[in-house]
Image 1 (cartoon, one colour):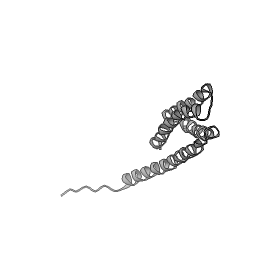
Image 2 (spheres, one colour):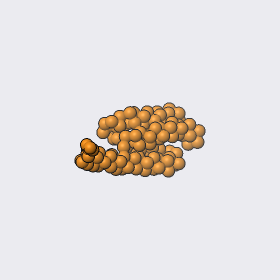
Image 3 (tube, rainbow, N blue to C red):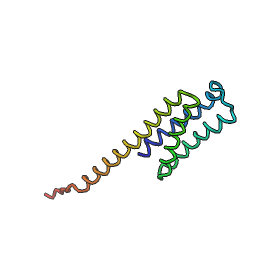
Image 4 (tube, one colour):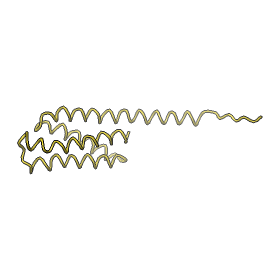
Length: 120
């Protein structure tokens, strides 16, 4: 689960960094507002990716998703991109849990299977 979630956050951090010049040039947002907002989310996404060993990483990652969708009020295309990354985030968590439970079930079956030794 952690690897999928970190991939989502890494790609999202790139998008968040690239939204900064879009906010400044197209949306006419002052650089004093755009830079801390977008780059703050960028840093938060990278921090969340690094903290995915702990529950706090998933909480921060979810906050990044809310922030990315919220940027849509300033740059409308971020509604689409933010929603897409939020969907990827949820899918990474759901599929990651399924993969982990399948691995555990496989390990349990492998350890419970009788071993046969051939002594002739």
